[in-house]
Image (cartoon, rainbow, N blue to C red; front, side):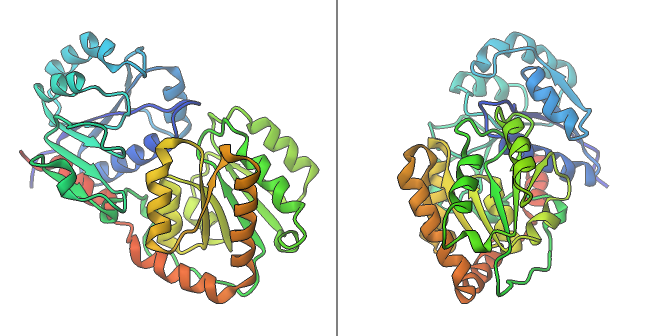
Length: 343
C-alpha cells in the first residue's frame, strides 16, 4: 500500500470571490482523505476561515495575508513548505502570479486549478474542467482537461431524477456571494410574470455566508411563503433533485445540475463566468440568459427561456438527458489520484 501523502490546498473565499473555488477544493480534500491522504488548507484571512469552519473543516493554516497579492505571503509560506514538506500544493486562485507559482514550484509539486488561461503557468500539472478546455492550451505543460475532471461531491453520483410534466419547484442559485442582488431581482421578475408565475409553487434560493444581501432574502421569505432560503446546505444533491427547473449563475453548480439532469437556464454575475456559461450554451443543453449587469435585457431573456422550459416538458426531458450524459460525478477522485501520483 502506498504511503499517506500530504497535500496543501491554497484557496480563499469571501464576498468578492465566488465560493465555488473553496467548495470545489473542499470536495477534492474529501476525496483525498477517503484515499487515506492528508489535506490541509492554506488561507488568507478570517473570511476564508469562517467559510471553512461553517463547512466543518478544521485542518487549515491562516497566513493572515492579502488574498489579492499572494506574493506578499511568500516570506511566511516558503518556510512552512520547507518545514512540512508537502507532496503536492494545489493552487486555486486568480491572484497567483508567475513568480509566486515559480517560488512554490521550487519547493514541491505544484498543481494549478485553472479557469481562465491567463498566462503560461509554471506548474507541474494544470487541471481545467471547462467544457472547451483541451491539452493544446497548455503547450508542453502536462494537463488534465474536460468535464470528466469536474470535482463533485460523493452525493452527486447516480442520483435518480425524473422530469415531471408540470414545473412546480424552482431553484435560484447565485453562488456564495451576490453583490448584484440577483436572487431577489430574479424572484420578483418571475413572481410578477403572468406566463411564469403559475408555475411558481415553491422557490428555493441558495445563498452563501458571504452574500451581503442574505438578510434581505430571509426577509423576503417572510413576505412570500413560496420562498425557502438555503444557506450552507450539506445535502445539495437531494435539494437539486427535488427541483423541476433552475436559474443558476455560472460555476460548479451548473455541473452539479448536469450530473442530476435538472433543466437549467444560466446567467453570469462576473466576467470570469463567461467561458463557463457560453460553453454550456454552445453544447446545446443549458441556455444562457445573459449577464445580470445587463439589467432589463437579462430579465427579459431569463423569463423567455424559463417560460419555454416550463411550458414544454418534452424539451426539458431532452435537455435533462443531455446534461446527465455529460458529467459522471467521479471527477474529484480523478483529481485526487493526480495530486498523489509521483512526478
